[in-house]
Image (cartoon, rainbow, N blue to C red; front, side):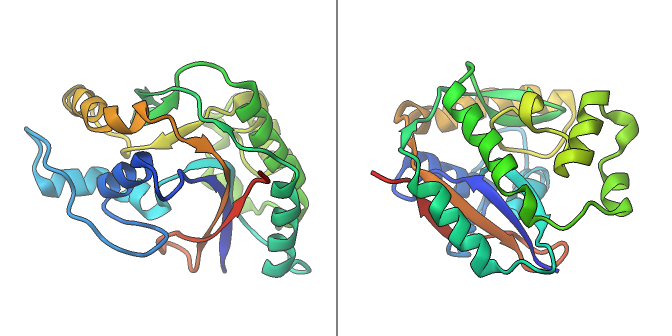
Length: 229
């Protein structure tokens, strides 16, 4: 069963895209693989292991989390709706990002609130909710409801994902959950590694449609939908 996701993917011609796909070792748009950059005090094998999960999902920031299409909805329907959605929007600057810890993993996190970006994420969740198949019991178990807040459990039931609306935080994931000592080693290195890319300040210029062709398979960027202008 194919799952689709609506992501922010930095434009291909930006340093943020190049640095991210090389760090994760895979370009989700072309399928090209890269050798992980060398990190002092961490072996290449360890770096590959701690980036395995984010590499599978592909370099991105989530706007609408992965979902399966309803039985009466097609990929063509989704493409048409995405095209219309994006044609009504204009590019805007990406807010300043910084390396930070989020739930035990490292990520590039928005350093200050950004109303335009938050509104885009809210609109993606609401506008495309009718496209997703209903939540299953297995979906609920996978999200571990006991570990969620009451509001996040409500989000899970209403929108199929707990970290939306008031619980949304824009981020591009850099690692899986790792021990504190490894985060302390890796975070300063990643700050230096991404410094030039973050200084270039790319735009949010569209939405990328990613697809997981089979359970557990690597997500691929299957199409970019540009904002008007």
